[in-house]
Image (cartoon, rainbow, N blue to C red; front, side, top):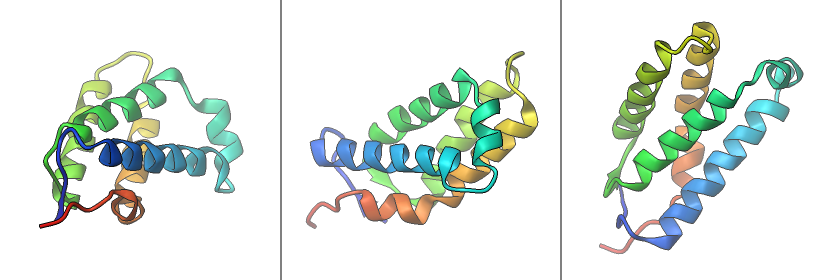
Length: 111
């Protein structure tokens, strides 16, 4: 479990950097990136921003809590008219798949 303080600047910077890297990988790091760039809508960026806001509020961030945040944010987008449910599922799975990379970029606080 990674322990973090809510108001820690290092935590926010680490998470922001990690999510930006994940976003870049999602759009440019795979063979499907070109197709994804053509399909990506504003909701994807907004969803990722909401995930970021939620995890920045957390004192203890672990994989289970992170996945729950992704699921909760995704539920709100599922009912939206402009959101393709298949793409939403891909974005959610992609965010979850990169947990290990994300946790390495989050600074650990001392015990």
